[in-house]
Image 1: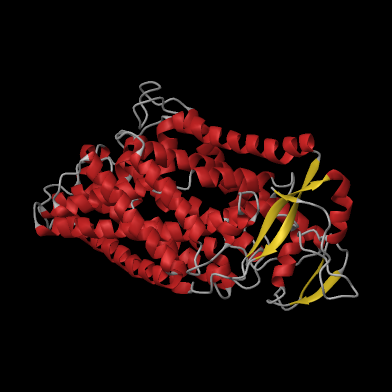
Image 2: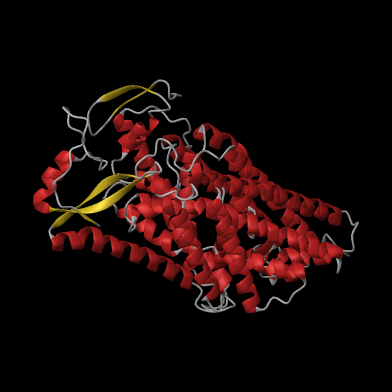
Amino acid sequence: MGTTEDLKYVDEKQGSKIESVSAESLPSFEEAAVTTGAPTEKVSPLGYHVDWISVVFLNISKMIGTGVFTTPGSILKGVGSVGLSLIFWVIGYLFAAASLGVYLEYAAYFPHRSGADVAYLEKAYPRPRFLMPTAFAVQSVILSFSSSNAIVLARYILVAAGVDATTWRVRGLAVGAYTIIIIIGILSTKWSLRLSNAIGVVKVVTLVFVAITGLVVLGGHTRVEDPHANFRNAFEGTSSNGNGLATALVKVNFAYAGFENAFNVMNEIKNPVRTMKRFAPISLTIVFILYFFANIAYFAAIPKEDIRTSKELTASLFFTAVFGNSRAITALSALVAVSSFGNLLAVVIGSSRIIRECGRQGVLPYPRFWASTRPFNTPLGPYLLKWVLTVIVILAPPAGDAFNFIVNLQSYPENVFRFLLTLGLWFVRKRRKAMGAPRGEFVAWNVVLVFTLLVNVYLLILPWVPPEGGIYAGDVSFFYATYCIVGLAFLAVSGIVYVLVIVLLPKWGGYTIRQLLERLPDGAQANRLVKVPNDQVAEWDATHDEHGDIIEKKDSHSPVQSSAPAQAH
């Protein structure tokens, strides 16, 4: 296996051989693969606050949020039996592990790019030019809200406080808590990571407590009368309905969502590939073990039918069944609320980098605004966007089905891009081979890629199968596949935006889209898409390289200034 000390490759564009690629020159190797998209920042303007502990807890804190406390009921409803429900948690782990292999291989090829999906899709699909960045940016911006978890956080705070959870109490508290989280993220990356790590420890301790309590329940040492009832005939009632099974798998995936969170801050990690190879799998495996034993605990303490109808408060039912109306219920509900808070903090840290990368690609208006790290050395613009959209989605939708619908809606386009991401890895490998690049530090097995593709196909197709009981018998009160339709509509909007902005308007306006590299005073870099009149394209191309940077004259250290009156796009 090659190392960064002896890498040799041929730059496909320039035809020049570059020898002895060191870690410091690795960004040039990354840029050689694709000349469109966000520029590689050789030195992270956001600093290097992410160590191995933060890698572990960024993943753990995003995975352990609300899923394991809220989704067991809907998963049991979808699969029909306790036995299959537990198997689905194992399947979810295997799928997450396979997907993690895909991310690790991309990270080995592009270690200096944050943003995970947005960066890797850009590298996998450079043609048609700007299509993938535009499509991903549109859906990322539209769906970049965290309302579901904020609402669950508010509900658990109210349960812990012993206050009735009315609709507007929940919404007001959700907005207030989320505002605090955004402010923490804006003010300091270092301290937001430290807080995330501390809450991550609380999460792990909480689930360990739940797991141990479940074992005590199984031993018959609590007030639960028959702790083995749900495990007798564990597969009784197993559903064969494709829609229910697909919906259950979507919920399981939602619970594991976050195994990739640390990849969003790759460029803020020293020795990123080695760190991710060691600690990303550890974080996922820890969460799987905790999830599995937490579900065992739920099934030991709560009657099957109560779990099926528990909606978002499964953990509260568990505390009530084991401890009764005691102070322990309040204390443990508070711990779940803390877990939800930490989840939201980990989510906004990672997703703010995704939005920043979309902005740095140039396909969003005002790329300097998205790329800038001023005034607090944090991505202020992406944080503000997250806050605005999340507050709107918390306040606007009617109460009732909003939670399940939003979870499913966010998952469907994500599964489309996850399928494309896995498929695109073969394209990246092919281009690397053509460039003469050596084998990467991590290469996923082909069988892992095939498994990941098949699961994604399953998640994309089976939700269209009608549930038992008719088209209104899904986990929402309206048409069962509405979230699929809306998710595809978002993707269609992305395609329409691309065709209009990148294809039709330049054709009608007599100009060509080019990217211009901009360097900000804080060290950040971004591309800005500019309109170059067609009769001046040749001059533009002669004075700018493929990355949009101005070419310096050989006889002068001053850059050539293009005389083309290009306009910001």
